[in-house]
Image (tube, rainbow, N blue to C red; front, side, top):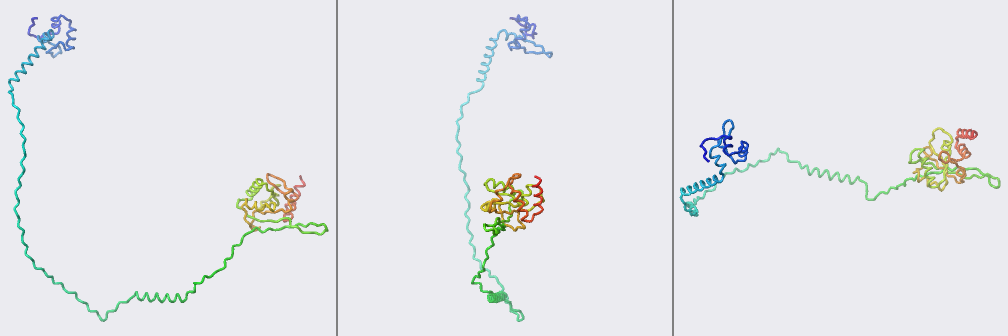
Length: 325
């Protein structure tokens, strides 16, 4: 193919190759067709060699290989062959140090000892008018020995122990207050019979209400009889003035039971909280009845007790109340 040495446009290359302009652009995108020149406006210009390289790609590769081989041969001819250089091992020499000169020892001449003149201490002569020192330690010892002798002479003889009799602590017991009743025997003579005994205590359980509740609870649990009388019994019938002692009947054999469960301590009747009455005959407990959850003696027994202990006003109130029933 005869081509001129000039720059060809894309349209001219399409005419030379016999393809469309679009195919030329596709060849360029696939790097099959190269354009060595590109104008300022971005248009491609192709040389004669560009077109020949596209048409005959094998020839271009052969030419490039031949040119490379010729260039390599020329370089080999220009560079002369160099012989290998043998490596020589260098052994370092040992350093030689200069010898030191021998020094001679200087002979020291003996020196004479220097004697210092030390002045002798001047002895002070004691003055005649100077007072002699006082030996205070001897004086203290002398005074101490005198004090010991006087102390031992005045001290009493404590070798024999003095025994002092120790009186035993008095035991507090609840002393009973006996009450008697007069009955007639078969001969018609009146005989006094002890019916009850009164024991006064103080309790550690609190007030009268708490004590009354504890009496009822523990008595029911242990199946033990009791019955309130006097002010406590009257208060179960009607409201009365405040009082300070709970009177209640128990059997003689149950006295220790109530002392234990109520933590009772014997007390003076004027300071007592409870008055425990032992009913030897059992008549007061036989006629008891329950009121407001507590046991109380009968009205007859309650009136008898009120009159016996001087509560006449409460006894008359009880009569009025019973007559209104």
